[in-house]
Length: 248
Image 1 (cartoon, rainbow, N blue to C red):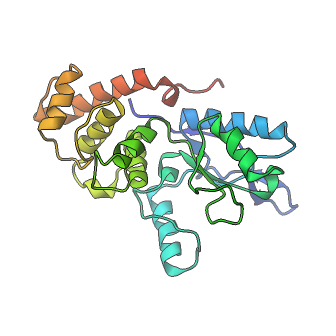
Image 2 (image 1 turned 90 degrees about the vertical axis):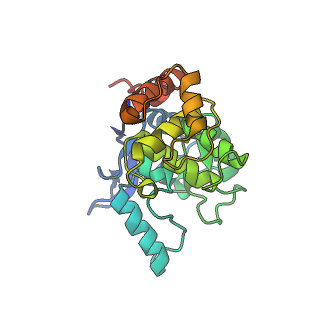
């Protein structure tokens, strides 16, 4: 099973003609189940401090990410935005927020957010820094980040590898892998299941085969889709929060 994207109803920076804040637009208002829970638990905790969690961005489609990257390249957008395949926004696992609406110090927000699995992408809690507004809910893909940080994989930087892993997990294509999307998704699963198989590159070698066999998955290059389903089922068992829909 792929990690599902579900709609989320949360207030945004966008306003109507009367100046009232509107919900985040539907094209952006999608996230994974664990991100959904993390956002609302963080919003609840922040409200107790007198602040509000108001978003400006969340999910981005491939085309939306491509436009964001182009805006950065052209200078229209100052903050760095990677090309498609390199952002947690593309898997509904990253959001941008209104820093002023928090009403608390950023360091204090980091503490609150961290309790619910949200992590910043800057090294110090300074509101003046670019991307101070950006937070990820990486879930099991943090394991891919750590894997690459430890140089067990070398074809991507850790953040790009983890982002690509999260995008594959929702069933969206990552251009880098061309026709080998299922093989790359399978490798992502194996890493999150604790196996060392080299790079996520869509090229299945002996280490991938060994890892599959250790997990009790019959190796069959003619049925990569079948192997992927079995691996995804194991991932779902290990990380159920990424698949369980929140109560209606």
